[in-house]
Image: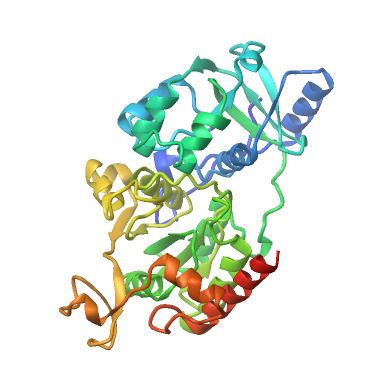
Length: 400
C-alpha cells in the first residue's frame, strides 16, 4: 500500500519540513479500494486508542514528517537513547504502536494489518516491518526523566501500552472530524496561508492553557521581531484535570478579538496528544511547528511540564544539545514574566529591577480558588473577559 500523491513543493515556503519532505499518508482511490478488500478478506486488525489515533492522523497529515508510520526498532532505539532518528535527524519522543504479546504473535514482517479507531471504525492500514519487545522502564527514564507512575505519560506507558511494538508505514483512509473545524488547518494549509499573507518570519506559540497576561506579553514581544504569530493550542488528548479545549478556545477567541492585531495573528488548532515530557516535548513541539511552516518557536517557563518533574528552564536548555541547523526552527527563550506594579507594566527578571513584593503572581491553586468563588483574578494577571469564561466553566463543573 503506497498511496500516490504529488510531492509537496516547499520552495516558496519560509521553512522546509523536518527532513526536507512533507509527508502525506492518506489513501488515494486505488489504496482505498485495496484496504477495503483487505477488510473483506479477514486480515488481522489492531484497535487504536485515542492517542494512537491522533498519532496516526498527525503522521498522515505530515505534522510528524519525516515519519511515514509508527517507529520501527532502529528509530525507536536511537530516539530513546540519543534523541535522534536512525538517520541522525533530531527527534525526542517515540511515536509507537504497541500490542499485547498474543496479538503481536499473529503478525509478521511484510504483513498488512487493518487499523481501527476506538469506536471500531476502520481508519487505515499498516504494513508491518518490525515486531519487537522494548524496555518500558528505560523509555520512561530516558524520555520522561522518571519512572514514577504518577507522571501521566509514565502511567500510560507502564499500564496501558502492550509489551510489543509494531513498526511500519501507515495509510489513513479518511480524516477524522476535527473538534474545531473553523480553526483546523493541516501543515499544507498553514503553509499556504503564510504564503498568502506574505509572512516570512512566523512565530508559533504552543499552549494547553488559557492565555494569561504573562503569555500575552511574550507573544507580543515575539510579534515585534516577526511578520506574524500562530497561536497553536493543542486540542488533542490531555489530562482530565486540564482545562477543556472548548473553554480554552473561547478564551483565545476573546483575546484575539480584543487585544491582538487582526492582520498579524492567526489561531489554528493542533490535534495532537499531549505527552507531558517537559524538555523532550519542547523539541517535539518545535519540530511539529517547523512542519506547519513556522520559523520560530516560543519556549517559556516549564514548557510541557507536569508536577515537579522538570527544572524551570530545562525545556530551553535542551535546545543547546542540538546544532541550530539540525533543529532548523529557532527557539525564542523567555523567562517567567509578570506584572510589576512599580514598573507599571509587564516584565521579566531581565527587564524589571524590583523585588517580588511588587510583582503580581498567583499560584494555580489560588487562581482556581478565586474562579470557583466567582471572583476575578486581578487584571494584571488575566484579562477580565478570560476570567469570566473560566468562572462560568468552573461553575458548570461544580454543578455537574
